[in-house]
Length: 165
Image 1 (cartoon, rainbow, N blue to C red):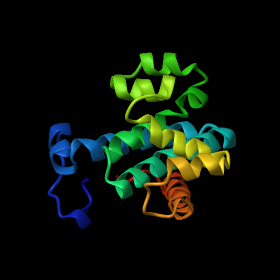
Image 2 (image 1 turned 90 degrees about the horizontal axis):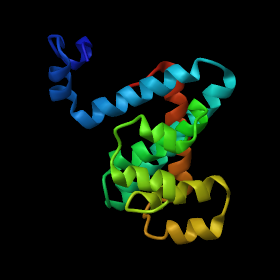
Image 3 (image 1 turned 45 degrees about the horizontal axis):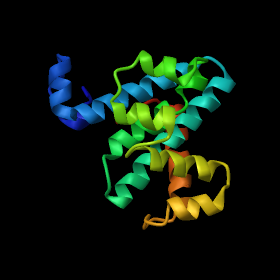
């Protein structure tokens, strides 16, 4: 935020940072920062974080391409979908500690609601369940293989140089 290349005089408060970046971008950046810190613990943790970031970015990109729903909400669901593994806790305990909406909770715990279809799509893609991928991704104008490669590249770049919004 204080980068001279952005032309800002300097950010001196969190409310000002939120005003400049926007709440969604700042929240996303903070989530990436959080999981990047977990990744530094071990190579296994780094892989788990990479997997969570790939899911998050894939969900976000497909949602944006489809122009249905909120891509930032889809990003959050994709990212949180691996927090049980990252934290070594059951998903219901993870969600009890976070202020998430009922839609996010329903998608992650029960696979239902408006945010669940994208998570089901990425899970099917990861498991090479191509019939399910075809069915769930039929409305997607972008080739899912390209989206997945872009998500992997994006996740790897975030882990190698640190988070940017």
